[in-house]
Image 1 (tube, rainbow, N blue to C red):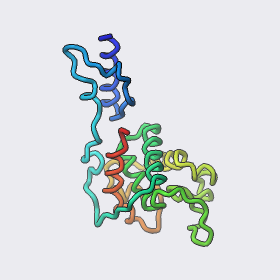
Image 2 (image 1 turned 60 degrees about the vertical axis):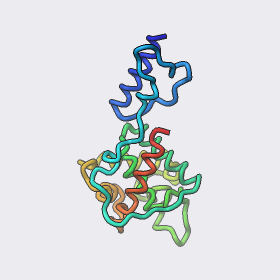
Image 3 (image 1 turned 135 degrees about the vertical axis):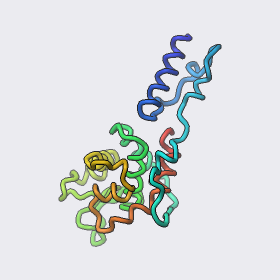
Image 4 (image 1 turned 135 degrees about the horizontal axis):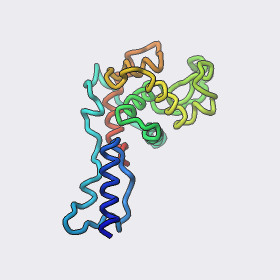
Length: 195
């Protein structure tokens, strides 16, 4: 039994060291500490560090909206896609802030006369600009992965203010509007990254 628990502790510590990811809930059996070992719960990662989520501080006045269950589900989908893409909490903050600006975290279909060209989905990506089909860009995992693929191609995005990193991917007519969502995006990542 010591060997099983020790491997679990080392596995969790290794994941936390490698990328800040938790392996998921442990069974009650695995969580039982043995003599000389700290409880496994003490090894599990806490909320992400605020300095990692907002390394440059927020820029300008911040906006905040109340979120519905659907919007929270989209936050969780963005976080899951970020983890699946092998990117960190900061990438999730940039992604969520971008989706807050573009769609208020609502997976929008075609809005008729109110549509910005053919923009759709959480990130208001356009099929005519090569983001994917309508079915793809209205899938939260696909659209997040597509956004993150663009973000990865931005040299030094980690060292940029959020609004510059987001704008480089999105090429918006309103490049400074992403900044207003950084605090709420960081709060959401802190709340849901390890859930």
